[in-house]
Length: 199
Image (cartoon, rainbow, N blue to C red; front, side, top):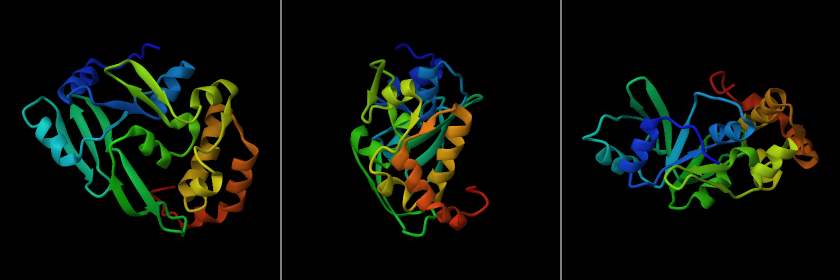
């Protein structure tokens, strides 16, 4: 599948030694034939190395969170949200705040921290190849929402993901898989732990 991506993103991939992936909603929507202006990108390049690699280029890097390895990469009027591959451990209060973060090398490991199968899709820009670790494409075709791992693991400590689940159901018209739905209902009170900005 040939994705229609900005030329600036192809250029960025080359600068980063062809080590760059688009992840999440852009990949999902492209498969569905939908358009979106938001493009999230990721790789195993840490923020320090990212800033070095882009220091003498037209790209600007603004760090969002050193702890999470996130930044905004921009060129002219185009902006991309960047994250380094990572593992996360969350507090058990539903607040969606990691209590520990470890930067890792493989997209397969990074996919574990994603929420739903339809969002755990990685597009390798250089290879024009989709990495689908959780049968996300199959679920898109079947219009099913399910968590990447056991629903308890994904939803028990994260009110944001419960809100996202029902947002996607509404926006995409997908059906929520039974165990995922029952777990979301079980932990619905976690939404109360979220501050206004996260909601």
